[in-house]
Image (cartoon, rainbow, N blue to C red; front, side):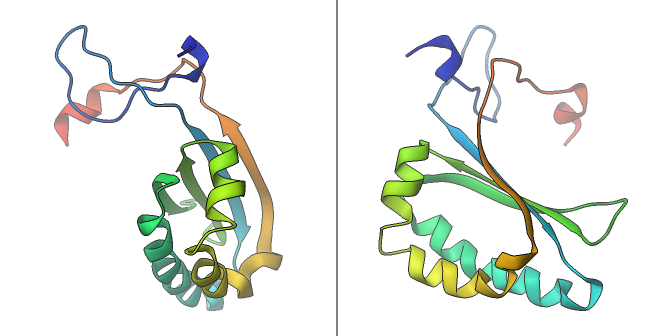
Length: 129
């Protein structure tokens, strides 16, 4: 595996121990009006069942902006871009996923795949959690 294809997985490690996985991160930015936010989060809670069941999905999280409450970012780690587009999107879990989030597709401001670089790590605060 090439160095650029490695990303450190979250967790506790002994000195010198490294765990790696090939990964692609998809970021989807939304702008959701205040009166739609509860329904939006409920829709993603339903859609998350499809992500959790998909072998192409490593993990995911939906975050809401602290400063601008109408902004959300969905982060999904996929095993690869190809697995996402050719596997998940054409697989058995996508229809339920898309049905849940379809009302919010027009609220997407960005939807892109990113390759994780070697610049990863944990801060001192991680030990306090």
